[in-house]
Length: 426
Image (cartoon, rainbow, N blue to C red):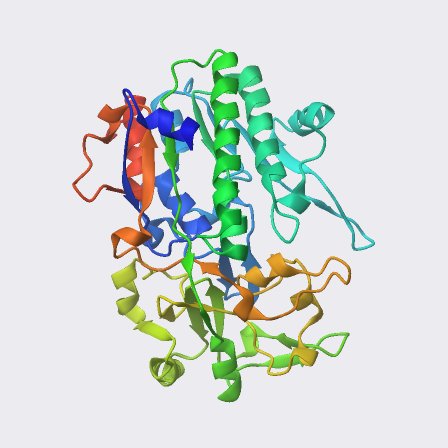
């Protein structure tokens, strides 16, 4: 990655970066932008279970999920002239940044979707669309995922920089997820993706310079590390066999989970999972079921969740961590013929858990194979050794002076940004 490496050469530097647990997109982005972990900012996974309504919400865009002040909040408190741009961080819809852009497709009455992005100012997306076309959402996730979505993010960010000259920009370039999860993090396809992303990073740097922003402190932070896995655990099927799940049929005869009526159920996310138990009297019985499972490394109950920073009201009563070589799948049906209709589609919102087999959908039939063993890469595991650390690259080595021999944590990054603008502990 010559363009990224150039940032670390000369006056720059790089250090290892340890992500907070859980090491997945939503929580780590929130930690990067707030400077605190999930126990404080409340982003406990890539989804939330609303106990009061019984609804599960995966991959929402709304910033209200974040319960702690973010960098743009702190900058505004310090000096209103310190403007910010949030460009595709996943919990930025409605945030206090002066400018933002995030996908927000319109859901039509006939069940179809029309592509759109939610922007601030509101009329910015039509302007971006004139020069760049629609944001290519079909290339953002799923079987068609490729560099086109990241390229659009970069090119639109350059337009924004030229137009608004923000003092702080937070950009999410997600490209390295795709090939690493589909083909494995050490695959030829993953190596190709690294080069594609570096080219995009170079175009971003050049674009900001052309926009007159030639005194930028560049920080590039990896959010997590994707590692090889070769086994899969189905915790909801464990509960199904114990008659703890409430199930109903959908219109196609598939089996649909009813979380609010279940004794216990599991929201899974890569290599960790939240177990929601309706009655506190059942917690220990449910925990014991998972302690016996050969693919589960840790079962954390109640205050034990604090050992990994998840002792928060939004967390499940029990938190599961998989063995290092395994990951969790959300499936609760015992026969694939009884899978709910949404299980065979690219549908990131309705599924009560992350499902990477969406990457393998057959575009001719538009159905996934529902073969969880296909997945090659996963993340979310505690970063307890160097092989699971990311990296933080800075164009100014002095910003990393506080790093210990083991590097920095994701919660340290917000402080580096704020200190750059003269915001210390106020």
